[in-house]
Length: 70
Image (cartoon, rainbow, N blue to C red):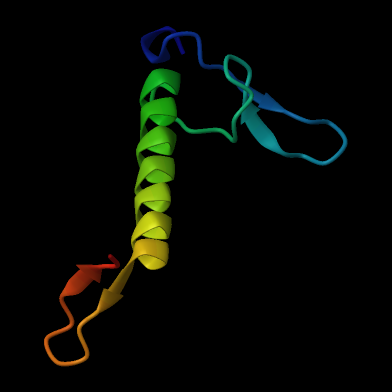
């Protein structure tokens, strides 16, 4: 729709997958393509932060506070 910055529902005739013509992501109405991209980046950044914490910290066995390795 025009209120969704060019997003248009497209359906594959072979596998019936619905996706957005504007950004080729899985259909995400009513979320705008730009907001979807921001959300995906936020989730990726959080995942990278969690990965760093897993590698570089250990939890205190008593209080479970994350402690950075020295």
